[in-house]
Length: 388
Image (cartoon, rainbow, N blue to C red; front, side):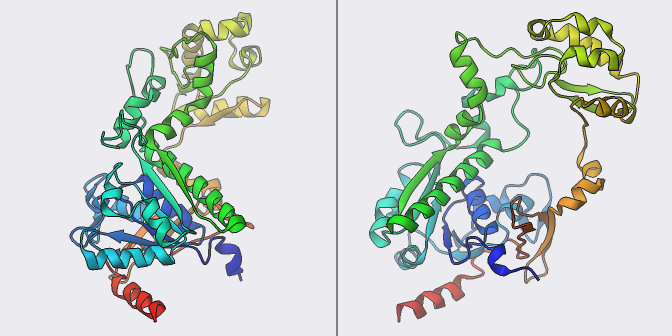
């Protein structure tokens, strides 16, 4: 039997999730995966707007699959932040909470009277996490903090695709996910600090800060090589700063990724002696012609045939898998990263589990994302009992 203390590193910690959409709820989700109790504060009339943000035309139990994915295991407290009675209940929750997470636009949370200074006056031990689109400085603070827009302003789109493609966005909400993960790091550090000092702290990040930090490796190169812009390859580009053969190539029956390696090592394996004549510097300056040669050769055999040649020689290569192929692999099954979560009204959702293992075990919470306000009365009763 798994020791419950090993499953919940944050057992006994209560997180008040006053955020919506992706970045803030993602941070609260990860804290919940680590064992914290997460109470999601939602508007009574419609709840988190993410409930209706559909990735496709699929909904489960009246809510989007996106909402289910990012709010599993949480409790829902329905409260109108503009209603005095509900606001008093939210303040009572702040008094009992360890962590507050919010992602309102700058200025909004202050008008509601639930900003860090107000929360600290209620609970000096609170660890308060804020995510905005672009920070709180004047220039961009009022702009909508949406993932695609943050990607657009970050410069990162110019790293994707091939040379003639123009800016290419990521196919995932990377700004939201990265900002959420950064906030988790800050909140956890805040909890450690509080355990030493007894005093809470306000930790902040933004979508644009997360995207800039995401690029720290290539930005450092840009800042120290005369400000040259990244130069994407025209052929099978995978990284604007890495030389051939780095890229994804089509084989006879599928696709294969090749990572960085000396061309001289690859030349005999591909039966391309011309590769041996390029210097390391030319592997970058002549990327397109080198990749064109490699691409033509790799089409001659299947992925399995090429991997049978390359892997024994310790060449860094991998088949490009789609989701069905990934899930059919023994490696994916051994990871055990899927779970089914359930809700009292019969809703059942197949989704991912926490990516973190503790002492060899992956904590799984089988509770699905809540209906709006489904725990409101229980939480109000709990607050009333604590007030007596």
